[in-house]
Image: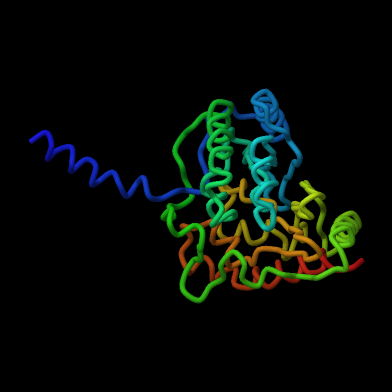
Length: 289
């Protein structure tokens, strides 16, 4: 009977082990203003050995902010993989004025972004995940469950984009020109954008930059509020990335779905023009200034 019971326990526990959520809840902080909350979280991250490279308060979402961080082990692993794996170079921590803290689940995002070469970054990601849990607390995963085996080729539904679908924006003469163009466009606020962070690996000719989309009518605040998605603020900001002389941005029907996988089709239809607007914005950021 003991063997039968054990077999049943294992059988019913398997599905939970085979799915991942995009975010993890941290330990709740006492209520305070958002600036104070973010500062308190930042100190915990610094003490745990992370580097804070970006601070983002999305326009139109006044009670939420994101801290973008890097980890030495992850950066080293990503540098060895190269190419589009640069999209997995950062981790993100969401902070809200009511004391809610959340952070991206490294395994979820690395499996989706590094894909077939995930095993090369797995150890670094798990080490960082452990330090995040120690620094911020490890509560329940949330945001929707995606089967582990689906993340490397994730798409929300049949016919929608995957990681590398419609992602190329512009081709420049060189990596240096591509990077200079993106930096210049963000510096002058092209299409109502601003730079939040950047990670550049010149030896591998790869870079990723966080883009704040600040338009009141079509920026990130508009569509995040439309889907009531502020709890997923660690999904922001959107990234633009460079591999060799080409500039890319993940297509929004992939990127938004990966960040909010539990949304219903009706909610997605409510922001049906967001993918086009985001693509247009990123194309302007990627172009020669």
